Length: 185
Image (cartoon, rainbow, N blue to C red):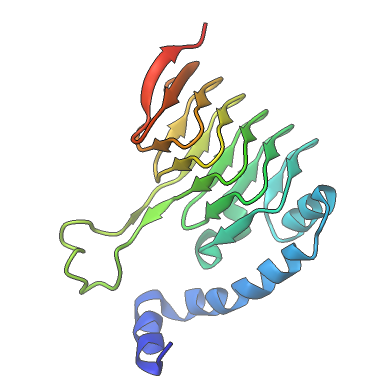
């Protein structure tokens, strides 16, 4: 990264966020030392995440830690997160109790096409919104959940789906973009 790019980024995000940004790799390195789920859960708590009882978190990754930090990662009881999930902490991610994420789930809480003068900013302005997973929902492998989405209680997101809208409670959704397939009775 050139000095000009670094100065430009610093101007846009300010000193406090820049400092948090430079600390982020240290926090992630600390987290990667936890090779077993119980250690990882403990380390996440030490770093500021709220993680409920009987929750299992396999090797996952985070980015945009300089925004909400691990304080924006709120996990209920008896949740399960499979390997290689990716969490964007530009805004909060809230998991109620009994949420299951299969492997390689991506949860995005923001969109930003680049610097303020980027030509696409006028068409796609930067924003961030929290993502909420209601009690007892399931997210299938390799799915992506976009910013501002709420996954309803007891809902099932099929593998490989891209969820761009809220999912009603007790529904199965699938596809790109995800569409309602049926109600779960």
